[in-house]
Amino acid sequence: MNSTARTTFQDELAKLQALVLDLGNKVKANGELLLQFLKDKKMVNELFLQIKEKDKEIDDARWQVHDFGDQLIVLQQPVAKDFRQIITSIQITDNLERIGDHFKKTARLLEKVSLADTEIPEEIIEMAKSALKMLSESITAYSEIFEGKLNEIAMLDDHVDHLYKQTVKKIVLLIKKASEEQIDSLSKLFFVAQSFERAADHAAKIGHLVNYAVTGKRSKGQFT
Image 1 (cartoon, rainbow, N blue to C red):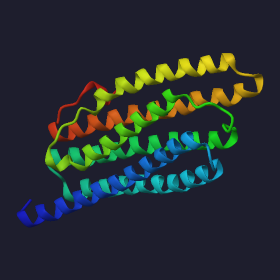
Image 2 (cartoon, rainbow, N blue to C red; image 1 turned 180 degrees about the horizontal axis):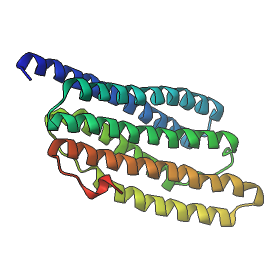
Image 3 (tube, one colour; image 1 turned 45 degrees about the horizontal axis):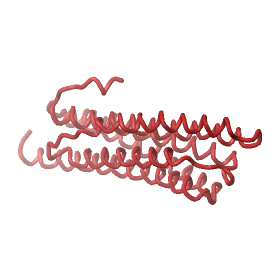
Image 4 (cartoon, rainbow, N blue to C red; image 1 turned 90 degrees about the horizontal axis):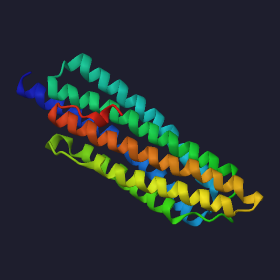
């Protein structure tokens, strides 16, 4: 590949990266909407509509990345490192889309149950914040992939797992003390907590994938 062709190809890789980052920011925005709702418990119908609409954009963006990545592989025949970046971009997109699915399902669930008189455990708020921090850092790590930087995002997953266990215990305690009318609403908090726990898991996988693209070495976390 001559220097002119190489420059053009790098421009194409940058376009692919921009598509993934745009998708990632849409997913993060949906997670932030969920967190805001958990804090103020207002306008749940509007929350679901906003998240549902943005999720359509996320789905479209995912396949746009797949198509563009496939095109680069077929037409450009990239060398090993570039090939890893393309494949990694596609895999990261899939992980982001799955996070988006969790957020959409959670928003739909919240639309069907009233939390107006339900105590939202502080543990679930803290876990949501930590999971969104991991998601944000994973997006940042991918944005720096051309700079060859490594990350330790997966190390943060243990903290979120710990918070998740605390949250589950807290919800169980609340259910034990709750009236019969409150039990259904409180039980739905298990699914909310799980949504953010899964988001953290996928963010950890994105961190592993970025490191693989940079080093060419796979880590155990990519497959768990």
